[in-house]
Image (cartoon, rainbow, N blue to C red):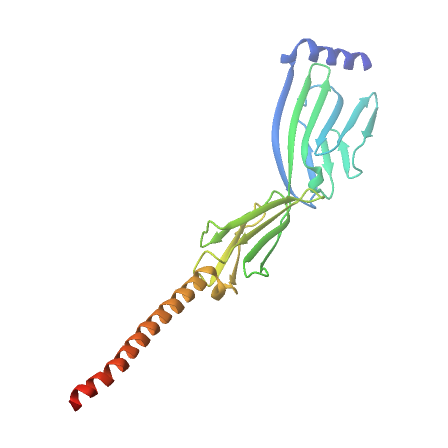
Length: 253
């Protein structure tokens, strides 16, 4: 058996065309059971199956070796939630930290097969919509994977969106809609995510609407115009009062 394995590896180096590869993308939800299948020709004699895991900040190797009337599985730096069974790799309670590329290498007495599986773990985010201390609207989607997308109705050029990576490899997206640039009394936040059947929406009334800059400017203009009108009326009234004594003197003459 060892001789056959050595010959198989040698064939891989000397004749790359003898290596058959396949790739696939697997998407699962966080917390579910994941089963990755490694492709191989069932008519061949299976000698060894090796899974190489390339994760975000770690890697591990699972080797499933078939001897005469016996099998041996070895794990190197792998999670205890992972189990290899013949041509399959199962991951219980799948987490976002399990995301990465899983390479399966199958060796038989004729050739070596290589299969790449890209595992993507979907985590639904928690959403919120609230007012900040200055009266702006703040919408957020936390703990999601991949990052959620946030949009606003109506659209504004004064929107600030921040995407933060969390220690557990999920994402938090915070979007702030400034209340100082529109004349609307309320806005709507729309959150889209692959785990949502329909986008999440939330409406909120802008508490700072009456104190926004445009309204303050209008108020200042109104006050100035009122003062000017009052001043003009006051001047005209004074002029009329000054003319009245002169008219009375002319009448007496």
